[in-house]
Image (cartoon, rainbow, N blue to C red):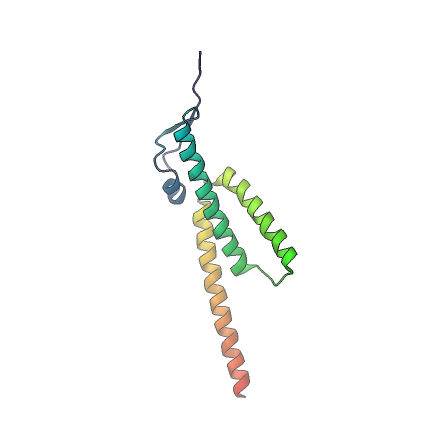
Amino acid sequence: MQRETVIPVPDNLWPVADFFMKGLGGEVNVADEGEMATLIRGFMLLYLTVVVFAILAYKFGFAKKLSPLKSLIIYILLIIGTFFLTIIFGLNLPLAESLFIIAIVMGVYRLRLSQERKQNNNKKAEQ
C-alpha cells in the first residue's frame, strides 16, 4: 500500500510569497515531481528576493568600508542567515516585504545624507 504525502499550502500567504507560490493550489503532493519542482522553484525565488533585499538593506544602512575578505565573509553569512530566515518565516511573515521597505528607507536615508554632505562641502569651499 502506497501512502501519498501531501503538504498543505496556506491560502493566506503574503503578497511576495503568494506570487512565487502561484500554481500550487491548496496542497502539494510530494510524490508528484511537477508540484515539487514548482514548490522548490517558488521557494528559491522567494529566497533570492529576500537575499537581494537583505543585501540592499545592509549596503544602504550598515556597510562600512572593509577589506574584500571581510566583506566576503559578511555576505556569505548574510546569505546563509537569510536561507534559515526564509525557511522559518518566509511563508508565515512578510519577510520580503519588510526587507523591501527597509531597503527603501535606508536608500532614501543614504541619498539624503550624501546630498547634505555635498551641500556642506560646497559651503565650506565657498568660504
